Length: 168
Image 1 (cartoon, rainbow, N blue to C red):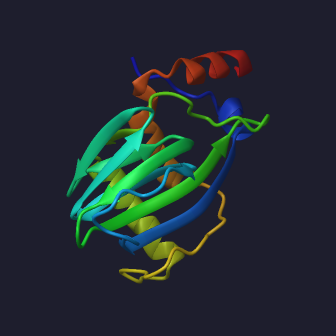
Image 2 (cartoon, rainbow, N blue to C red):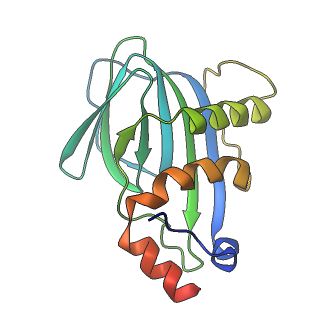
C-alpha cells in the first residue's frame, strides 16, 4: 500500500534545493574519502558509479539512479562518467531529515530523470552541461518532488510513517 503525506504535514516540511548539476565527475578510478552528503538523487548518464554507505556497496550502471540518505559515504567513478544530480534538504520543523531509512539505493527512474532534466534546464536556462556545481537555493516544488516521493514513499520507512501519523 502506498503511503501519503497529508497536506498539512507536507506544508510543515522545510524543502530546499542545494544544486542541480549535469556534467563530468571530479575524479575517476579511485575511491573518495568518506564524505558527508545531503539527501540527493543522481542519474548515471555515462559510465558507472559505486557507492559505499552503511557498510554496503551499490553499483549504479549507466541509466541507473541512486537515492542518497543524509550521512557518510564514499564513491568511485568509472572513466568518463557523466551525472545528472540534485542535492536537497528536506527536513521536519525540528530539523531532522525527512528520510532516515529506506535510502542509499539504486534504481531506474525514467520519470524522475525527465523531471530532473527539466529542472536542470530551467535553473540553468537551457544549458546541456555545466562544468561546476552551482548552488540554486530554491524552494523545492511539487513538480520535482512529486515523482521523487512517488518512488520513495512505498519503501515503507517507519520514520516517515510514525512522523506523518503524529503530525496528521
